[in-house]
Length: 307
Image 1 (cartoon, rainbow, N blue to C red):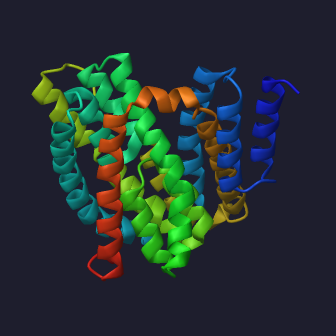
Image 2: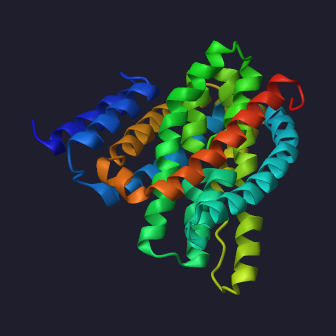
């Protein structure tokens, strides 16, 4: 069986819901390490679109009152965590001798929302290809680790659904990985994790604007419209009972879309990706992520961060 056939077979199995999100990710990683990717650019573009579509579809399974409550509380926590992460990332980057642009991209990706933040910031700072590879590779590898590690830690510590959803939203980089980890933990964790994560993702806008001002760039900052569509989907679910039969179907389609996204993410991880990351940027990303993950976990367990 050739690599293209295996790739499409993985896509089909992921889209039908036969395999779990975690298994789809592992299968994607196994594929990425075994074969050269036949559709690397198309796969990246498809996963970006599917992620946004899946998040919007998952909104049809959310109750708006709970979304507002979680988002309002999460906004305060994300503001603190992002500020701390940006300062720590700057310090670690200087300490480890990582180039300024690569360090800033890794820091922004870790502090806000992974690849989405890196893409937004890179359009302003204009890093070279190697710096982009360093940042994307670091965040990408850690996202894959988080998808497998976080649910295991949550179950081992007997965390509640609320605690885990909040921890995943504050400590995992990309929205897809937050949703994937939370979905594996439970429905309530998924709802809280998605909502708080989207509140965290909104910080792309002010951080990008500040970056553009400091860099004196005229690049237009793009608004993440899928977040607004997610909120509108939650409004429909809460206040428009006429579509009550359709909403569960759309929400289920969102979960299937997320499984496909995780498979696509896995296929993009390869030996070449790990090689291009380099040790110092990767070490910066790991240290920053570990500090955020452990400190937020301890704060949640101690009751300092609650919803």
